Image (tube, rainbow, N blue to C red; front, side, top):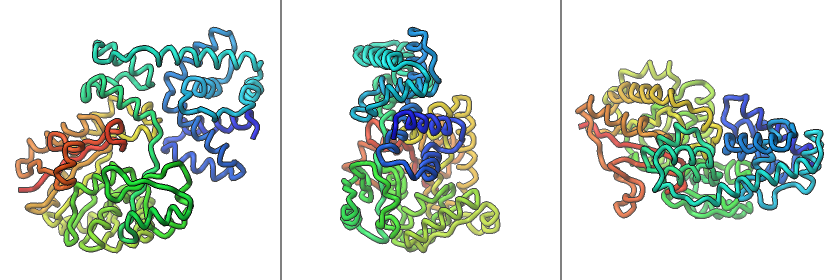
Length: 451
């Protein structure tokens, strides 16, 4: 495809993502389904550029404006971001710039190729100067570190400040850098239908090569990006897409086959499916969802997986059974609504959509959910609180406040993983997973036992 058309489509997808509240991956799927004429290389360029522009949005806007002002050239804003992304982040674009890019960009902007090339080279030189500056995060004042990390890695300063408060400046910069890297394609093998080895073999027969996950015995990671939803292996229910960190949250619940389990914030049912497999299709799982779409999606996934020990309930259906379930559950999982700050590498626009003044609201909602669902835990049962956030205010602080107000619960050690592995993912009694340490999404979990 001509570069001019490729640029136009990239502009269209990027601007659609900014205008739509849905996650970028959902928008991209709809976008590409409507344009089946695009080849794999064209789709890869459009997708890579769009996600790269979202990741580095603030920095690219700055570099683009600076270069244009220097030259006195006016080009469309989104085209400026595409140019800045390709020039400033060469590690993501080696060999991926179309041969006729400069001509296509000049035609798209209705200006001269030489002007586009000059802007491109100036941006590349500016980013090179930034990247070659020595990393002295441990010697910087907090304010200096916040400003530098926020600019170079393109994050809001308030977010970097919170990262530093939790991880220190060096850890915060490593986290920001890791969340700017595309997440791996990780799947969870459905052990109701196959072992990990059997699933890997089936995928290899469809030319998809995988490696074992680092922490979850159910995880496989594809060695390159492919549409694995189109595989026969997926249609037969042998796996689900699920980040390895999310799989670990299900694992630390340690569900037993005879248990009664409530997944109180089931969403699309990813952890419900995993728990059903961990319980070997025995016991009972009650998955609570918020709307008919989630119920339909979760039910469809349960059927494909062969899970028969889980039922899905809407709020109105749950209300009919609420009194009967009080004190009846061996396990209540609360994968609470949160900021999603731990999933930025998958959803980079979250950087710009998460507002600091909303974090306290999330924490209040999370505490309310804990209070509302705690009564369903039986004596000796477990309440597992989890988020995909890396902010203390949504994690440790919520749990600590709940324990102060509810002495009938106590923080309990996780029974999974084995003791030899605990040091790397368990800290202060909590499960804490980070992209820069574990190559998973950011997750937090606490196990609370009712005494």
